[in-house]
Image: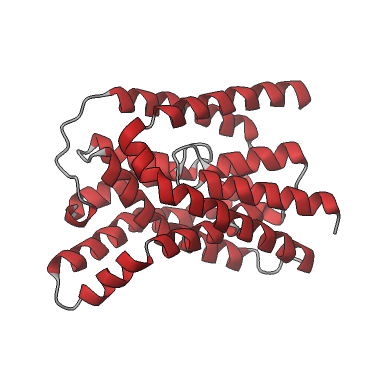
Length: 268
């Protein structure tokens, strides 16, 4: 194993953790960075499997709330409805992801030009939505109705196109459907747990015979880096969004997309 591969795995893990829960598309950042670093992973599995680090980060931050919800399930209707809402929102991505997995990994993940374009398009959409004046009808994730959760889940499916952003799709969808900015981001956190875990399990199963010992070490390095960098983001994101909105992330997407396009055209 080369030192360069270890350094690249560390860099990509940090990028994954820093970008997973903000609406800029972590997959796009990891794939583009890997492309320019010359980092290769069988079936682009690295980009998916290191997401487990980000999952564990959000689980650790929300551990107290998750335990409280779990303990309340037998007697609290509100807690049961919330858990069901997250599962209902997860369902569309679970079905479509399982059906289209091979196409997504073999075609969409291998098209950096598409990723850059989607970063720019998504940034423009996020910027426009952030500037709209909404009258939120839902401000607490515990009170999201099942119909709203399902519609947010449909928006999440757009993120199967790399560069779109899972959190960006769910947040934009939530805002358009009547939520406030803070609860939209928080519901995106909770929805990430089953979605990313499902993607991890499916991808690991699909590529179980393609991964070598060296691949496993690099994935472990990326996983650890993603865990610690995601912790920093999750702890401060909700307060940042409440104060600043999503415009900074929209501009970041546009800049990265434009720079990526220029890089692809110059160094193709």
